[in-house]
Structure formats: structure tokens, C-alpha cells
Image (cartoon, rainbow, N blue to C red; front, side, top):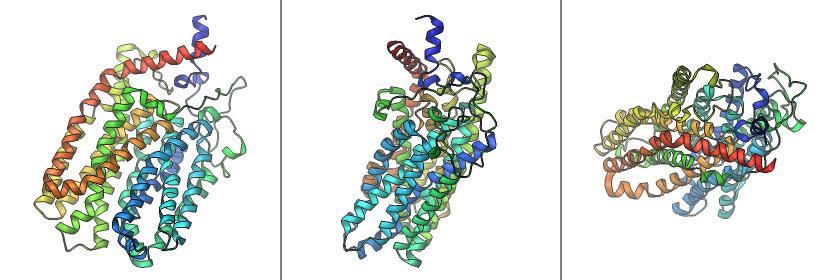
Length: 501
């Protein structure tokens, strides 16, 4: 095979699937249209953590009305987390193969139906409560992975950080707003009102997706200029096309279905997933223990005011997500400038999803994280000792806000880098991220009460943040060895194409 022929074959590989658009932008959508799409998927993404956390205030009531122990009702929470980790592996991979829009709508529809069932479940059918909670998790959990895949479809690395930062606002506000709304609904209208509220909200989200969300999977619509089949088109196409497919355009070949578990064969991806899972687990132990710790340390709080305490960490995550996105884009542009000065402007593919093997994308994403990590660890330890010493409630709330912001400043860069390293598999790799962090989070939550009882809040958060410190070398290994892993994946893609040519 001649070199030119090999280059032509390589252009259709998953890592360079957009070569036919060399004279065209990566996506035909304008900046405003991209922000509109990201806003849609961010709104849908809020339901995964929101649906999980809105349930918490109703647990004491459910133990009474179902005549079950707290441990058995908590089992519905555990099963929710398990399905929350597992279901995106299926739906995310399916979306990478068959399209984002239909899977988005399907997940929201399943979630809406499960909420109807939960609102009507008889109190003598505990088994049905368990089944419907699992179905609820199956519908809600995949929206995060699907949204990440959409961002990978429409955004090049130079703008991806800002989009991903904004997109994370929805999923991260869920844990803060869920307990507040759940507590108010349960106290005022009864526990069933929680699920009727979720039914109305998810039904509305499903209708919005049907009306406005376009298909973005590049294997179906290319850069967005290819008109897909009816099920892939929004009912109200308010996003106009400013570019049409050229006459000689050939749609990228359909990729074969890939088992998302095969992504765990990539050592750099595994290191990023594990590190991100550790930070997420520590973050989740903070949110999971707020109600019990604050009720014990500050006895003047009632259920409603404890729910309001979640707002501090929630608004912190919102601020951190927005700020992290801007820092990510700024770091990318800074590294791009250095790279061009060293290699020349022609070597930089500014409008491509594929930056090549030489561009240090790992360093561009992770180089500012060390500062956030130091402050995050110090703040986490200080938070534990504030609770240990029972200082004024304002102190731990302020530290919660800081921890929320810095947790996003640490997790968003790793999640964005994972998308950069696996172009075309955004939903699958985000599903892998989801299963790792959900399983690690489930383990952490299951033991946090035991650790708190044994060590107290002070030493507990010294221990947990110490684990973050121990895992930090993984990031430096990724920055050091990442380019080598990317090159091996590229060579493997070329060998596969040659073998099938």
C-alpha cells in the first residue's frame, strides 16, 4: 500500500474521522448554537444526581409507611447507585453507535414512567419500590454520558473546556437542590409528591428534547450539515444550518460496535478514571454526611434548615464548574501558543478534533490542577476539624463552598482530557468514568459512618484527603507517558485499517 493510500485510509479511522472536512470547520454550528445545544444537554444531565438526592429527605417517612427498617429503605439507595454506574455502559455505547438524540429521549421517557410508578406504588409492595428505583436509575443515569458525547461531537479541544465547564453545572447542582426541594415537598405535600414533581419535570425535559435537540453524532450527520432521517431531526428546527454538505461529500463509514469495557485496556485512561473517582468519592462523602453531622453538631437545625445547608456546596460546584471551564480554555490557548512557537503554525490543527501525537494535550489540561489540589486538600482537612471542634456553623459552610468549587476545578480537567483522548467515543468513555466513580462513591458512602464514629470528623477528613494526595502522582504519570500511549493507539488504528484494506 502506498503512503498516500495509507493516509487516505487513516483519515477514516475513529481518531481522524473528519479528514474530509479539511477545508471546513469542525462543526457547522455557530457559537450561539453550540451554547444552545450544551444548555439543552446540561438541563437533561441534572436529573441523574437530582433524582438520587431528592429522595433522601423522604427516607424516614418511607421507613414508616412501608413498615421496613432504615437499612432496607437505604438498600433502595444502594441499588440506585449500582444501576447509576452500570446503565450508562449500555446506553452510552449505544449512543456512540446509533445516535444521541433517540437515546436521550428514550432515557427521559423511561425516567418519567418510573416516576409515575413510584408515585403510585402501594405501601405493601416493597419489592416494587426496589424495582422502580432501579428503573428510575436506569433512565436517569445515562443523561450525563450522553451530554458529554454531544460536546465531543460539536466542539474542538480549544473550546471544549468552556462547554464542559458549563455542562457540569446541571449535574453538579442536582445534589444541592435535590434535598432542599425533596424536603419541602415531603413536608408540605407528602412523599408521593416528590415523584409527581419528578414526573412533570422529566416529562417537560423529554418534550423539550423532542422539539429542539438535533442529532450530533458525526457518523450520522458529519459536521452537522448532513440531513439525517426523521427520528434524528428536531420537531422545531430553530438551529439553522449555515453550511451544506459538499457535492462530493461521503458520509463517514459506520463504526462497528465497540465494547466500552475495552477502554479499560488503556493505562492512561484507567489512571485518569481512578484519580477522578477518588476525588469524586471524597466529595460524595461530604455531601452524604452533611445531614447526620450537622444534626448532631448543630441541634438547633431542623430538616428544612439542614436541607438549606446543601446550598453552600451546591453553589460552590456551580461556581467551580464555570471557572474551571474558562481556565481550561485559557490553559489550552497558552499551550497552543508555546507549541506553535516550537513547531510552527502549520503543525497545529486548530479546527480539528484530532490534534496529532505531538501536541501535549495532557499537559494543557492538567498543568494548573496542582494549585487547586493543594488548596482542596487543605480545605477538606480544615472542614473536618471545624466540625470536630464544633465551631460556628458559618465556617464549615464557607469551607463547603470552597470544596465544591475546587472539586470541580480538579474533576473537570480530567473529564475533559478523557474526551480529548478518545474522540468519537465520548458517551462510552464518560460511561466508564461514571461506573468507576459511582462504585468508588458507593464504597465510600457505605463506610463513612463507620469511619466517622471511629475517628471523628477531624481525622476522618485528614484520612480521606490524604488518599487524594497519594493518588496525585497518577496525573504526573499521565502527563509524562500520555503521548506514548496516544501514539500506540494511533499505530494500532493504522494497522487495523491496513489489515482490512
